[in-house]
Amino acid sequence: MTKNTRHSAWMQAAILLFGLLATGLAFPISAAAAENGPCNVNQALNNSWVTRRAYTNISSGPWVTMVQGSISSYDYSICVQSTGKPLLSASQAWVAIEGQYDDDIVQVGIIKCATSQYFGCLNNGFTGHVDFFWAHGQTGDAANAPWPVKITNSLDPNALHTYKVQFMTFPPTIDTYPNNHYEWWYYIDGQLQYQDCDECFRSWRRDHVEIGTEDWNCGDQLGGRAANHQKFRTVSWVASSTHTNLDSYVKRGDAGGYAWSFGDDLNTTNGLDVWTDNHSQSACSG
Image 1 (cartoon, rainbow, N blue to C red):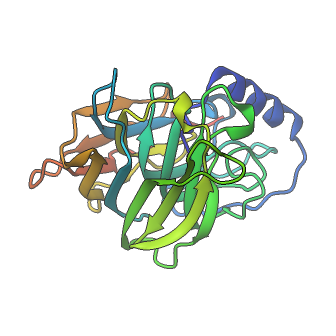
Image 2 (image 1 turned 45 degrees about the horizontal axis):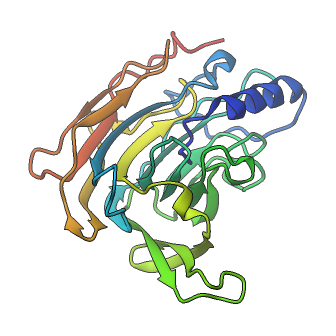
C-alpha cells in the first residue's frame, strides 16, 4: 500500500484531520474473530512492516524493470472499528519496485481493510475481505500518492499467488513525442490485470525491489500466525539481467503495537516467512 503506505508528513496530517472530522459516520465492521480487538486512534498513523530488499547500483543503474514473487494470502485479523469513527486500518502483502524515497513505488499484492471510509481504502470496496490491489506513487506528488487500487476479490484468502509488476517501454505517441511512452503492467498468476501509464518515471530512480507485509494500525495482524506463516517464495527481479538475491531484513515496529516475530525461509535465499507472535490487545486498546 499500499505503500508504499509509509506515509509522508503531508499524508499523515491529512489522515489525522480526516479521522478527527469523521465522527458519526456509519461503517461496516469486519468479522470479529476471537483475537480481534479495538483499533487505536493514537496508532493509526504508525504502520509496521517486515520486508526484504535487493538493490541495483543506486548511483547510475541499471534501473529495475521487473519484480515477481509468490505470496501466500492470509485472511488477516483486522482491528474492530469501535471508537465511533473510521480509522486507518489494514493488513497487506506485496512485491514492489521502489526508488530513493518512500512514495516512489509501484506494487501489487493483497490487502484487507477494516473500513472503506478512510484514506487508503476510501470508497474502493475493500472492507472486510482479502482483495488484490495495485498501487503507484511518486514522492511529493499529492495527486499520485501510492494508495491501493482494488483489482478484484481474492476468492481463496489462503491461496498462494504469484505477483509481478513490470516496466514497459513503447515507441512515442502523439502525446509523448519525441519521447517514448512508458507503462507499468501488473500481473497476478501470469495474467495481466492492469496497465498504468507513467510518463514521469525518470524523476525517480528505480534502484531496488522489495517484498513484504505491513499493517496500518497496531490492532491489525502482521503476516500470518506461528502455526501458519505468511510465505514469500521464488522472488526474482530484473535490472539489465535477472537476479534472485535479496538483502537482509528491514524491520520496524510501531510504539505500543503487537509483539511480533519473523523468520527466514531456510531453504532459499529469495524468500521470507512472517507471522504475528503475540496478538494481545492490551497494548492497543483506546
